[in-house]
Every structure is written in structure tokens, then in C-alpha cells.
Image (cartoon, rainbow over all chains, first blue to last red; front, side, top):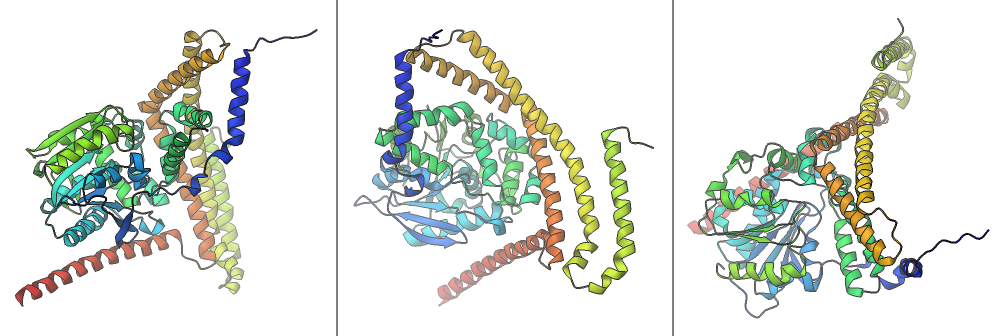
Amino acid sequence: MKSETAIDPKIMEEIIRFNKNVMDAPSHVAAPDEIVLEVTPHDVVQEMDKTRLLHYKPLTDKQHKTPLIISYALINRYHILDLQPDKSWVRNLVQQGFDVYMLDWGSPTAMDKYLDFDDYVNGYLDGAVEFIKNEASVEKVSLQGYCTGATLATAYITLHPESVKNYIATAPVIDGWRDTTVISNLAKNMDVDKMVETIGNMPPEFMYYCFSVLKPFEQGIEKYVKFFKNIDNKKYVDNFLRVEKWLSDTPPIPGELFKQWIKDIYQDNLLIQNKMYVNNRHIDLKKIDMPIFTQVAVGDHLVSPECSMPLHYAVGSKDKTLRMYPTGHVGMIASSLSQKKVLPELGQWLLERS
Amino acid sequence: MKPQTPEETVEYYKHMSLFWTDLIHLMSSKPQALGSTGPMRAFAANSKKVSTELIEINESLLQFNKFVTEYYKQLAETWNDAQKKVNLKAPEVPQDVEQIDAFKRIWIDIFDNDFTELFDSKKFGVNYGKLVSKELELTKHWNNITNVILQSVNLPSKEEIDEVYKELHSLKKRVTKLEIEAKKKKEMKKNEK
């Protein structure tokens, strides 16, 4: 007896096409290892332990007087801010005439497990700011902090207000108790003392686990299906591979720094309550009085808007601006929207104060 | 008395193992002392530590299994609930390409929502925290056993290396502080001139 199953020929066609795309993929696209992520020309102008200070070469004849230093997050590397020319945060700012520096935290190793908030805030960040002040012959710089880099930068501006003219907080991690993300749920229930005591630094694998539980089906399945479906679209696959390469490059976080960050921000929520200390020095947000620009992404599933926005209301600054954008954590810094909306607004704000 | 519960069983074997390890160690320590510089002597002297760690690993493993079972139970329950919702929304098996895409979208949205709800929940956070904590305890026991082996071949233990790291960190801080002070003094002298 002959058995027949009615299958739409289009479905078979789709399966065959998808299969062909998977087979052809290696000949269409570069391997992630072959992709270079740094696109905007720069010099490494200072190195402290494993950190590096990058200075981007000007792309305009004239530059605004006050240099800008970016304090990138502790999770993943700074490359997301300069992933590809048409979506580069750094390149856009350089093209707007700003003198841009980037602090690359590097990749800590086992011997760096005792590095703490004090080392990052009063050591590396302050060292970089002092270097720029000296190089550019200015008394103050503009400072941008992104994500956890903004937590460090916020601590820095309360301890070194004399060095910062303007502060930009992009998706800052500030009020841990209000954070509604999966990350904060895991952080709140973590035995961080035991983790640091047993394995030293926060391992990248732990971060990969955290990423894997964020929209697991969209990010874990659908994303790759779309990639193979669009294998002929050069721009799409290039962007995809660059982001994937960036995502897979997560350095460890020094144990002591990680411990204080988890405890003070997520578990005890000390920063927003003005109860946090860095090397016995009080972090009082009310003392922040410089112009401050807070950027928040409405669809941020890594740092929820409720976690970032309280900074705007907690500081003592009179000149303060809060902007909310209809995008996500990465979309705010590396997307068409960031190029068309976020960066022009930031540039205008900075220009008026630089 | 025969052990009744799993805890009593662990205690029973723990006692039995420690008794024989101690006794054998006492009986054999004198002849072993002849080879006092050899690796086996150092290993034998610390072998009790290995036994203790192995017994404690079993205790941690019992707890770990409890939390890992709960972890997969939560995932399985969420999966089943999500699948039921998908079945209600899309009762028929799709027959063409457009329907497959629509079905896939429904499936992904429902599964992502339900799993995000689980990962956001307190019950998941608490259990996951305990699971990781037990995993770390297992790692710690393993580290302790490795330390015994390292010491038997005269290599520094993890704690000893940590002490070096701590000292290095503290020295670096002191040097940086001194450098800043020296720089300030130099600038002051320069300004005086």
C-alpha cells in the first residue's frame, strides 16, 4: 500500500534552501577569528598593568577643547563601541569633532583577583584622566560611563569632581533593588564571598550562562536561523559575526571588584542610598554638581530603566538631562538609532558644554 | 546500630573511614619516617585530609543533587506549561511556509516569555544561588585534595599562591602611592625654583 503525506512543496523548497545556506556558509563569510574589531584609527597612549588608554585620531580639522574619556563596562570588551564604521559610537563622536579616549580594562588573570573598586576608580580611571589632562593641557575632561563602567565612573566623579567637566551616564547600573532583569535576580541570590574565595575572579563562563538565560529561544535558536537564512546578505552576516565575536570575548572580572559590585549594588544597594565607600571614602551622589546627561534604553534587558534612572534624581546637579530611547542595551550604543538619534543628541549636549 | 537515614549512612561511613585512616596512619607512621623526604611520605602524612575531603564531597554532592533536580524540575515544568499555551494558540499543525513562520513566532514568544518569567522569579533565583554555592563547595573540596598532592611534591598550595598575589597587590598599591608622593614633591621643588 502506498502512503502519501501532503507536504507543501514550498516547505521542502525552504528546507533545501536553508540546508544549502548552511553548507555554503563557510565560503560566503569570514571566520570570526579573521574579523578585526577595532575600526577607528587610534594610538595606545598609556598602559597601566593590563589596562590600556586608547586615543582616537582626529577625523576633523578642528576639535572641541574638552577631551572625552569613555569608561567601558566590565562585561565584554570595549569593541562594541567601535564595531563597524557605520555603527561606531566612537567614530561618530570623533567625526563630530570630539577628542575621544577609551579606557580598555584588559583581561585580568588569576593574579589580579585582589584588584578592587579602589584600584579601578582611584587607580586606573584616575590615572587615565590625569594623563589626558596633562596631554591635552586641560584642567577637566568629559567622562562617559557605560553600563558597569558607569558605576565606576559615578564613583569617580564623586571622589574627583575637580577633574570632570561633564558626565554622561549611559545605561548606568545604579539602583540594584529596582533592577528587574534576570541578571539582577541571579546577582541578588549569589554567594559571592564563596565564589571569590573558591575560584578567585568571576569566570567568563558564568557570564555566558547569564547571557544564555536572556531571551533563550530568540537568542539561542532564532538568531542563528536568521543568520543562515540571510547568508547572502553580506552586510547582515558581517554585522552578525562582529556582534557574535564581541559577545564571546568576555574577560574575567577581578574577584574583589566583583564582590563589592554584587554586594554594594545588587544585594545591599548602597550606592543609591549614599552608603557606599571606596577605600574608606564616602560616595555621596548628592555631591555631584557637574552637568550630567543620563541615557536610558526602554527595552534594556541587562540594566532595566528603573535601575538607571534614579541617578538622574539622586545627583545634586542643576544642569541635568534624562533621555529615554526606544531600544535595548546594545541598540543604544551600536545601531542605526544610536547613529541617527542618540549620538546627535549627545553631541549637541556635549558641544554646548565643551 | 545500623544507619536508618541517608544522613546516618554518611555519618556511619565517615566514622568508619576516619577510624581506619587514623589507625593505619598511627601504625605506619614510624616505618614511613625512614623516607621522610620522599613524596609518598608527604602524601601519606596528609592522606587523612584526602579521606575527609572525599567524605565531605559526598555530603555536598547529596545537596547539589537536590538543587540540580529542582533546577531541571523548574525548567521542565515551564517547558510543559509553555507548550500547552502554544497548543491552545496554534492547535493545527502548519501546512505552508507562511504558517510555519507564524507558528515559530508564537512558539518563540511564548517560550521566551515563560522562561523569562521563571528566570526572574524568586524561586529560581534562590535555587540557582544554592546550586552554584554547592558547586563551589565541590570545587573547594577538589582544590583541597589537589593541595595535598601539590604539597607532596613540594609545590605551593592555592592558599600560598593567593598570599603571594595579595602581597603583590598590596606592594603595587604602596609603590603607586609612593610614586605619586614623589611626583608631587618633585613638582613642588620645581615650583619653588
